[in-house]
Image (cartoon, rainbow, N blue to C red; front, side):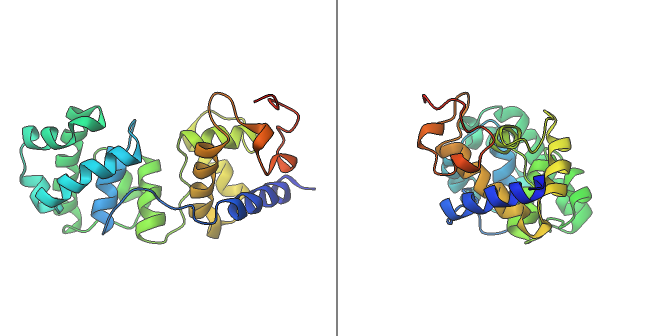
Length: 213
């Protein structure tokens, strides 16, 4: 069986296992998703959702955030970690969205990554979930699982994104990221996966490894 066929078989089994896998960040529009994803760096989605409930009430759009002071934004997002740098990036990003894109979050990868605080992972989250434009999100879970599954040997997120984008059908990029993240959180954990209780172990290249856990 070809590598792509094996990958699709495993991915399908995982999608059957996690049919409800979705973006865990709460948002009502592309701008809110962009902000929440920037805040999610080195922070749990649960914590981000708590913080953005306050942030979006006080500063709902790029106009309000651009006009806010660094101190005000820092106060609201303090518990997300790296809050000073995140606050600086959010204010800058808001200004850029207003000046370059008339207040609308661009539905374009290059335009997104040109914004302050936005890398390819964040851009792909916004594209895939806010605009239904396929985006392969490579976070720590996707990176770990892709290596364990033998889908990549790289440690570089951008290289992994390229390899997974070649391996998996474009139409499934966004959902596959949600599915891999769900499996990474539930069973295929770091540093040790729970292989002995994994329903898809027979399809996994790691079968026979770590079965004591």
